Length: 115
Image (tube, rainbow, N blue to C red; front, top):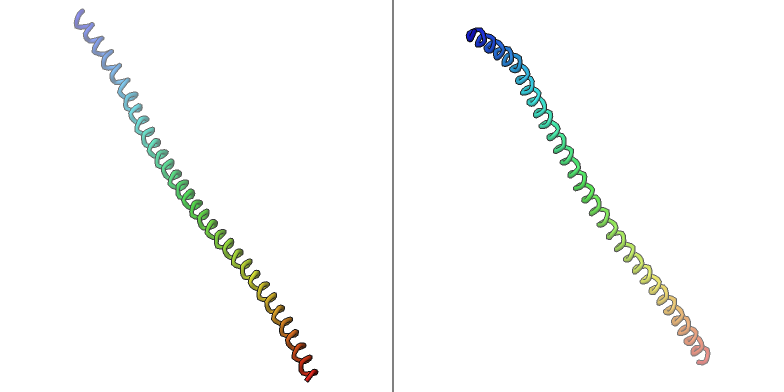
């Protein structure tokens, strides 16, 4: 009787371990698959983060370029205004000099008529 119970217990133990072993292996396989998928997703996230960082860096560079160009344009505009003011001053001075020359000419002609 004892041997029959040991036989039945051994058979049950063998059935339970043989049935659980494929499940354990399939779970291990699933865990491995999930770990591979996780690593793949992690790599994709890192790639996306690297791309986003590169785009942020490019945007900063473009902003700096735009600010530099804006500064140059502002300076050029200021310089153009200064040049225009100088041209107006020069034209005003030339007009004044011409008026003085005309006055001197009239005075000289008047002196020559007297003599």
